[in-house]
Image 1 (cartoon, rainbow, N blue to C red):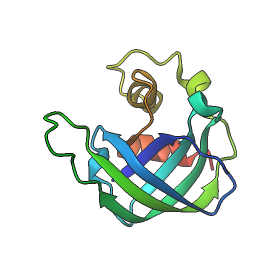
Image 2 (cartoon, one colour; image 1 turned 180 degrees about the vertical axis):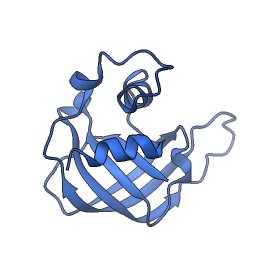
Image 3 (cartoon, rainbow, N blue to C red; image 1 turned 90 degrees about the vertical axis):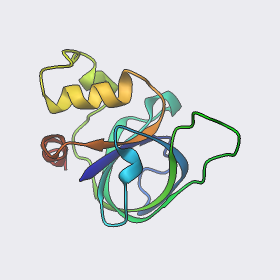
Image 4 (tube, helix red, strand yellow; image 1 turned 60 degrees about the vertical axis):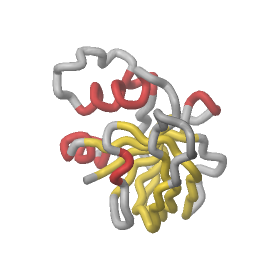
Length: 136
């Protein structure tokens, strides 16, 4: 399974990244060492959307806090960059894909990342991963 993360990325050219206590949704909590991941620099923090593809080199679940009933699972991951994006893909390119039932990769990304704009790690379909590979 492949994953994508939308997060603040201070150095898009870095060869490795560590993302601490990241929120997970849509199967993101299943991320594990060896998984492919697509990195989106969050536009909320001045990023430009898709910037890189990488390989998860470590993944560890963050323990839940005691006494809180509803908690979004969080993980800390390390990623080795394997490629830099050559084409743009972000909120601007995905904004018009709002037919949630059309099964398009663009719609899946718009739904998972921008319908609720919080930064997060999400699981993505094989079709969406194949689509994103075309940007490298």
